Image (cartoon, rainbow, N blue to C red; front, side):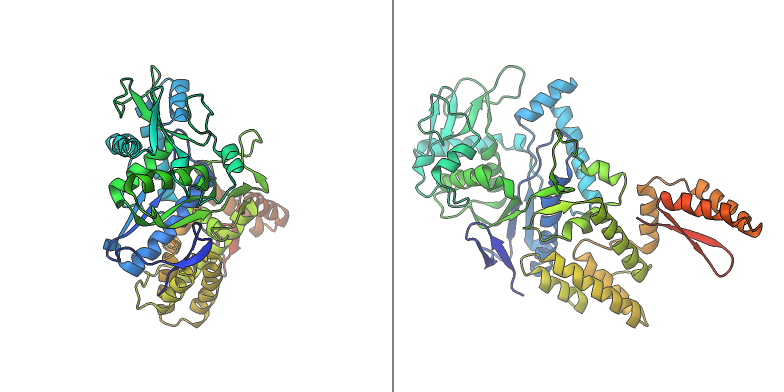
Length: 462
């Protein structure tokens, strides 16, 4: 099977040809841990989890290494810790724990390695000193800066004109800079914020710039060059552009990563998500109302490179789809592996630049086949195995129903009481009261089903 992925570097779909098929390597920029992650942060986590699953199927679990970093040294972290009156370490430990809990609830596999920036200061200093020694960086007023004009093809990833890059670089045009585009590799630490021994003979303790962190961590865990580097489209410039500059100039390589993949922006109900607009929503808040699998399916319903409009309606569609699919599989175990033709069909579609909308459309078809043509449950097992490749249907129908109830904090005793009252009202021919109870429960997302044996069951519906 040929895996073709859209490469931001070449602006085309390229066939992945690993540098070493026995050691396929992927790096994805992870979060800055200072608060609960918002739903936009979930998109790259889910997208590259799907790619991780596909790579493991194609090359074997033991032959794929997925690194997703944790940024735990940053000005936002320092400010939030001071605001809350806690230590920086306590803040990052707490928010990192939240992030891991939330991504697990979204059905994401843990990466092979989750390196922390603060654990790679030695590698950062090493890179910085290499860059200074080769003339790609310089020391100025206790800062170390990368000298952008030293790299003739800087800007190859983003392909922006120079004036746009200067405007979008988000860097201070300090008087000690040799060029306005030069960016910080190391800076002095003020009192009360983290600091480490500085490189290049600088006496004042300091801390790294943002970009050098990922160059150091990818080098430590994946080598000087590797196969895939991913992240959100907002990271193309300046972050990924600067990573490329640092790594290529430090190691004298033609590329840092063979493939550069970027997911599109997320809008919330048609608007840019922001705290000022009052429409900022975290993964944790959504998980209080919806099972994580609903969020995952809703996210994958749009192709990863396209902008996504995140809506309650979309979540409702995803929940109803999962309701149906779980009814189809019931309590069966998944059939996994290349012997499952349904899974092979899904893998083929994913191999076309992670075309998840096509995959989901085909899963709808396979669900119909499994529901109407299965006489031995074999097709249901195959359908479940195919959905598992996307990180879906990892549970049984019983488990799914339980998670739905838990997600909206249902009081089953109250529901049972209302059902009993409704049955009594119907027996007394008080149909008005019986209808009122049905409507009250429907308003809470509860659908009643009257069975032939005179009992009433219920399920969650959105």
